[in-house]
Image (cartoon, rainbow over all chains, first blue to last red; front, top):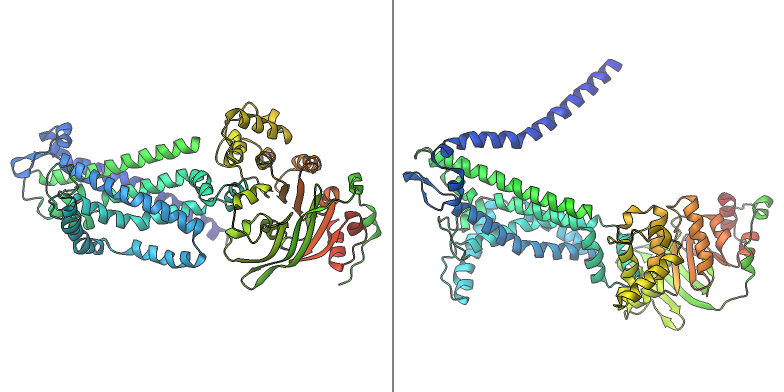
Length: 295
Length: 273
């Protein structure tokens, strides 16, 4: 009897440590594998040139990743600018002002939104957002736009990120004790002042980490963006023009990567950039959280 | 159930000398207050008068509705949409329960001290200055003066004067509770609503708070919620004993504690001692 318990105890501990080791080694092995696969590219061109050049003609051996990196950052930034304020205010309303009934309705709605496959967001983007950008928004602003653009990508991406970010923000605001809100109100704060001075302040680290995770998710999102962003290699600040983010580059060309020399290495390098940028975003937000918690 | 109060229990009572103060006019009157949460009747037809510059103790077992009664006095019940509140609460002649005007002003009159200290997520100084600024005071010197004065009033100044700009998290729980009291006093309330303010504190810190209350009642009307019988006996000028959302007995502590009429109060006195 006692032997059985000891054996089980040992087994459970071993299994837990193994599971942890697998999880910890995962990003490392991915990074190493991508690095070695991308290595032939480095023998041909310097790293600095690879990420700063905008010449892209794989058949001639020109691999400049700048347009892709720029498109990715641009689409992500736009989506963040759209999604962040919407999520913040929606989460504040739902946790501080809304009736129980509304909360009960909203929770399944958010969960359903989060569960919709990205291809459906993409289809919806083609049907609604692309014509909206191309035929409504651009003419109003007197700009020519094919509709398939960085802006359309940003909007679709924002919609995809909203349920994800919103859920995390709701969790964050719910952890603020109600006693703290009561304290602020008792001192004569209005409800909005109690939200602004106390709830948001107390939730800073949580808000920042929700945003960080949201951005990291947005940066790597592939399918829906690829469907509406136009996929043209060009370097432009005009959001009404088409872009070509890194994930779209990989997904679009994965099937034919062996047809051109070093093209496979180039796509692996694109994946490596993606991984590193997400890592950097995470580190930056970790640093912000660390700073706010220190205060 | 009929419970006999043992002789020793009543003999042990120590009635504070200040209880023999002369009767004060009531400053807060509660009429026919009923609170429902769905079908649950939390407060049942409460009628109560609170005398000025006295400590009124709301005594009773946990879950009897004391805290809800306290929260309806500064309209914090508004935060809980599931609560249905009816009746009147008058401060002098104004019914504060059935008005939506100037709620922040009403709440500033009713300083709240909660069970656990909830310092705002700002520095010690800003915690006290917060309410003063909400009142529209912008003069830095005046704010400084008031912050110091209120921290002195609760005996915290010497302990924190060198770290006013640090987070209150660095203070002990007892110090945090006194900070919360100072912060509440800084908005010049007429009342102090204290919701079991010593339940999270060690005996020494509790005693400091209790002594502060004895001082503060000269300037404020204090309503203290507690389930600790001995604390009620030490502090009360006026006792309200509640059970299951009803006021069972109320009045002069000398009378209520020495000659409890209801069986519920007698039982509570036996268990509490």
